[in-house]
Image 1 (tube, rainbow, N blue to C red):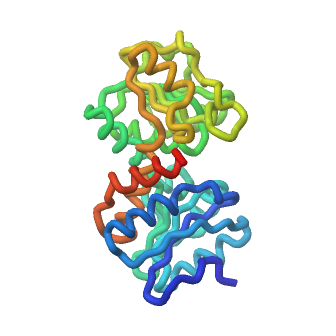
Image 2: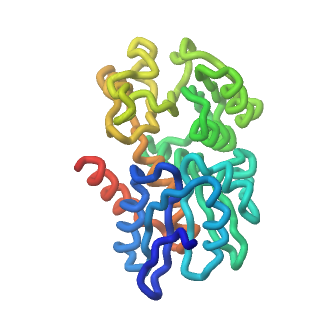
Length: 282
C-alpha cells in the first residue's frame, strides 16, 4: 500500500516520517520554501509504524518522490535500510534525511551541521576553540558532540542521568570529548541543553536543566527546544546578561541542508524561519 499522499500530476512529493509525527513543523517550513522558490513540490507528514518503513523507502525510488525527512523513532531503522550513508550518519547510526542519487537512496544526518550553522549565524563567531557543555546524551546530543569536535572545539563535555549514554556521546567527540557534570558549567564557553526539560507539552515547562547560579553572563546558552521560543533556562540566562539561542536556528538550518540536498537550490532561510516562528506563535 502506498504511504506517500497522492499529489497532483507533475508535483514532486517529500515527507517527514515518524510515529507520532502530527506535531512536526517540517511541512510548515518546507512548503513555505517551495512556495517562495516557486518549485512544484509538496511536503507532508506521514505517520508510519516501524515495520512499514522499508516499504516506504522502496516507494521513494519512484520518480515522483523527491526526499524524506526522518524523525523519531525511525532514524536508526532508516540507517539500516538505505543503500549508503554519509560519514556523519554512519558514525551516528542515525539518518534524518534521505536523498536520491539516481536509483540509490543516500542517508544523511544534518542535525550537527545545522547547529554549527545556527551558532555561527547567531553569534557571528567561529565554533572553533571554544569549550562546550552538552546536557543530555540522546540523538541530538550525539550529533552535536560529533559536529562540534569536527569543527575544532577545544573541549566537549557531556553530562546526563545515564552515564553509559554520556560515554557514548562523548566518545563521538574523540580526544576532546569526555563525560562531566553540570557542576563544571562555569568552565564552558557555550552550554547546550539537548534534553526536553522545559519543552511545551511535557508537563515540565517551568523547569530548567541548570540552575541560574550555575551560569554566568560571559557564556552563550543554547536550548535546542523551540517550543516555547524562550524556555526557563533561556529566561534565566537572559536575565543575567548571557547571550541566548533557542532551537529555531538548528531546526531551520538542518532543514535548509535537506532542502538543498533534494532540490539543488539554496534554501530561503529567512522565509523558512519566519514561517516556523509564525506557526509556533499561533
